[in-house]
Image 1 (spheres, one colour):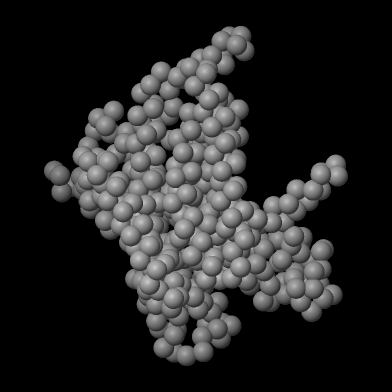
Image 2: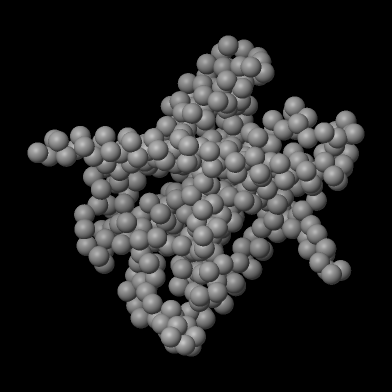
Length: 403
């Protein structure tokens, strides 16, 4: 087949509804930026470089890297609702709520328990807890996914700063079967209701609460982000039924680039926040914009031309997407441990504050490398084998009851 015919056939091909490969690229981008932010907090390595005399300054991207958690939440909503969106066009029946809960529990809880066990052992070995009360509250709240509700187990936890998103996800899972059913039957009404609750909650918090630290990341404040992910899945499923043309592929590619440029403007605006409270208020103000732009990028990139889709959806991004969950969970703790115990040697007493460039580069590289290694070991050595075994037992039990 000649190259032109191959390009034309690719342009006319319908997107894959079973796996949206460009979503892997966006997830990879979001997780790496969040990780870069947390590692930068420990290294203070200037995020910029020079190319043939042209200085590339990524300081705004890294300084506001925490807002890419919103993109991770958006992708979660997208992936959770995609089977429902696909069902509208391909038929089938949704998972029963119990089956949904079991799948989510099997996917997350065993590796979560192992993570808690390791981090708790490190905390005990290093005498990190000052009181028995804090130790008990920290452990129990994490085991019950309620650590976001208490200041000392949210901001002063010794069990990993990134685990709050797992609590948020678990809370959303509890109501997702109900929301998915409502969204399937009344998409516009359900979407509007979820967005209204989120905007109302964030508006009330911003206007009435002096310290928003315990409010800005709670589930009601993220319902619009989840809703936008679900709407993106519905739009993608709808567009997959349309006949594509080379012109539509090119247009989606150009619009995808335009959306990235708008995301950069949000990033720059957020990076200018002068203090911690302004940062949190900025997150609430920019959350709808990040969610809306992220949803547009998900849909547009999935229907873009071959080049953009290859950049976002390839073997590398698919591999990293598969290990991104444990990478995200472990990267911050690994960075803190490497700094605290001076694993990377330096002649400086405080190499991050004093600006030891060699140490900063080595430290940053070690953080990313060890986090990736931990993610691979956790995923392929524990998470997936355990999940497969538990699912086989569950399916056998369901089959036995069915007989």
